[in-house]
Structure formats: structure tokens, C-alpha cells
Image 1: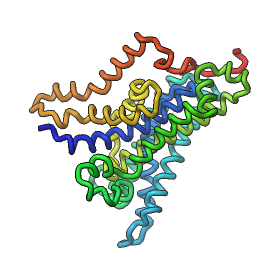
Image 2: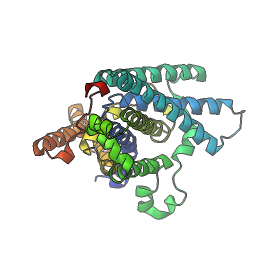
Image 3: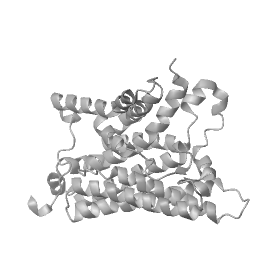
Length: 331
């Protein structure tokens, strides 16, 4: 029989990095910036946290345990700084220099993966191990520790309370981002910048400032997805090129949720479940069937995109100026 009690928690853990990435990309796209560099930003966020955790663990005297607060704070700060720098680089190229957003995003993805593999390989050599991976077990335990009373609540605790704190932070950020976009003046200005930057500029809104802030904050949120994957889902194990296509799935999730971060909370679990469904459905040695199951998240996204295009409702469409650089003198 299908083991839902094992499948759902794993689907949630698989979906949390996607939720971080899609929430960050949604904020970015609402400002009119199409950042296809999210996979690279998530990769840099993950390796930045690994660098911080590795250096902290190496600095401890032999036999000394990590301090949980410091073990969490250092990788967290490193992750945010690394992903912020990637966001600033994207903004400088696309907002200030008005470079093509598609090309810049793809270049950032390639650059981010290259940076992650370079530093990951360097740390593996510094560790002196024969295994091509870095293991930060002590740091990962601080990130993945569940709520203390989860084990006493049976199936309810396992399904809802058995995750690390970053999983709950991801949900809180998505809900807060949805509230800001829909209910606040800042969200109104941000949506105005994404829909018609010339009109927003004429109304006294600083278009470039909103684009910079939304993209940089979105990049930091996406970077947390990379940190969660390494420290919680992978239990502190970093190996080059192990992140897979989760960054691209996060971008697909933006389309699936129709640019609504609150919908992403449920949709990320659905995508996470579809991503690992091939592991729970018996297919024998037929690898072709497994590959078909792996296609499900993308097939679902294509179907949603086709349906939203057919319906042509304004609320289901991307921001009007998405992917187009704004130059004030062009008005």
C-alpha cells in the first residue's frame, strides 16, 4: 500500500526549497524583473552557508560541541550575504545597465553553479577526505531539529511538527509576502512598477529603488532555499551538482501559483510530492516509467500555463512589464 505517513513529510521537505525559490522569484517578477538566475542564486546560498558552517566547525577545538545559536547564525548570515550579492549583481546588470534580463539570468545560473562547485571542491580538499562530499553533521542537527513535543503527538506530530525551523519560516515568509503584495501601500507600488513603470514613475514612485529592493530581497529568500536543502533535507552533506533542477522547478512553481505566494505553500508540497512520486510507485526495472513520473511537475505547469492563457483573465497573467528594462527617457 502507498505509505502516506512517510510520503507526506518527505514531500514537504522536498517542497520547502521550491517554496523559498518561488516566493523570492514572485517578489522579483512583481517588480518587472524576470530573474532566471534563481537556480544559481539558490546554489550560491547553499554553498555560502556551507562555507560558514565548515569554517565554524573547523575553528572549534577537538572534542568541543557546537553552540546551537552560533551554528545556525553563521551559515544563515553567510547564506543571506551570498545570495544578496547575487541579487545586487543581477540588478546592476539589468536595472542600472539595462542588460537583457533573460541572458543575464541564465548567465547568473551558470555563474552560481560554477562558484558553488569551485568552493565546494576547495572545501572537500581542505577536509582531507576521500569521499567527494562535505559533511556538517553537528551544524545540520541544529537546523533540522524538530519541535520537542512532536514525537509525543503520533501521526499529527509527524505530519505537521517534525520539521526544522526553516520549514516554518518558509511558510511564514510566503504568507507575509502575500499580505504585503495585496494589502499594503508598498505592495501596491511594487505591483505598479511591474505593470507600468512609466506610470509609476509619473506618480512619484522610485522605480529603480523598488526593482533593486524587490530583487535583492527575493534573492535572499531564494538563497534560503539552497541553505534548507543542504542543512535540513540533505542533513548537512554537500556534494557538487547534487542540487539538481530544483531551482528551475521553483521558477515553474511561480507560474503554477499564478504569482501568488500564499498559494505556493500548498503548491510546493504538491510539486515536492510529484518530484519524488517515482520513488513510491513500484515500477520494477523499467527506468522509462520512472523518467515519465519525474516529468509530472513540468507537465502540470505546462497545463496550467495553457489554461491561464486560454482564459486570459487579467489576474492570471504575469506583470505587464515583466522582462523589460525601464529607461526613463524612453517615456
